[in-house]
Length: 250
Ligand code: UDP
Image (cartoon, rainbow, N blue to C red; front, side, top):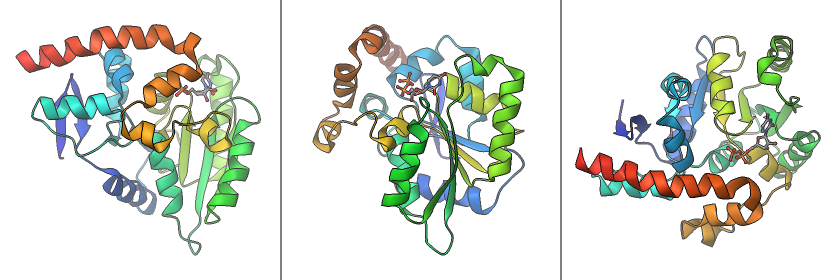
């Protein structure tokens, strides 16, 4: 495997085109259980330092893709270069765009507030006619600790028989959930994608392309949800440079 070890995490040296091809392979040749994608950004990198459970989830992932320019920039500075940023919010639409009408892609949307998944489904059908959203579910608060609710979600997914599952529960909940249920999930491929279902629904807006290209998507995110994100970003801005420094010295 062509992987780079950074901050205690193995990250795949894979760009967008190859990531799309890999997930398509998983769908074409399903294995027992579900193979899932995680996309470490600065915040995940910081969380990973103190969470054994999140590290275990990362080890169970089929693809670990760098989301966020600071992770890519650090990889170059540390001479273990990653090819490019591959955000989950870009990978999902890239997979939709690669679907062919003669082999429609069946997608299940798990997460986001009630009604958002259905709105995302309508937009997806309009924009990518070769994609069929076969189910959407917004789990209630605390569902992850409720066995009956988890069984219900697994059954919903099994009955819908999707090719691809988008898990938009935020980090680290989505990664922990995918890992915990990996062997029972009746879907060949899943992406842990944060707020992507909100973006697809038009519920939240992503930063314009030029802001993303300038590496300032985080600033846009923070401006849109300052109360929730300011503490997190302050902690990350303090800890991440220390991680880069430790890695540099090592
Ligand atoms: N979310 C959810 N159930 C939960 C917690 C979060 O569906 O129990 C959804 C929330 O509605 C939003 C997404 O998870 O759609 C959070 O994505 P975001 O990327 O903002 O989370 P982060 O990883 O930044 O915390």
